[in-house]
Length: 125
Image (cartoon, rainbow, N blue to C red; front, side):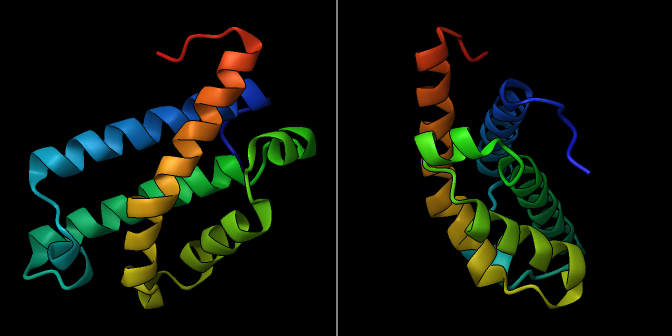
């Protein structure tokens, strides 16, 4: 179940999670190598935490309204595919794929969140 009941709540949640995740990953020194091939329990736990954040973003982004999805480029089919992989095959998740989501798709999701809020006259925190 998604956490937020409307598009604005989902957009804010997506934005907040991505910004926080990026800040924390930088602070903790999470790299592609430590994410994909963790060298111990600490790196593995951090990677799992990042995957949880990707799951949360996918959960919210996959449930924006059809109008918002089309207007702002939320590719719900692909987003829900990532969400389902994380939800149903957690131990077998392709970490390379999830890293690509964090490195590439987070940018487009942030841009979509900003565009939505700009059009609505809302300042993201």
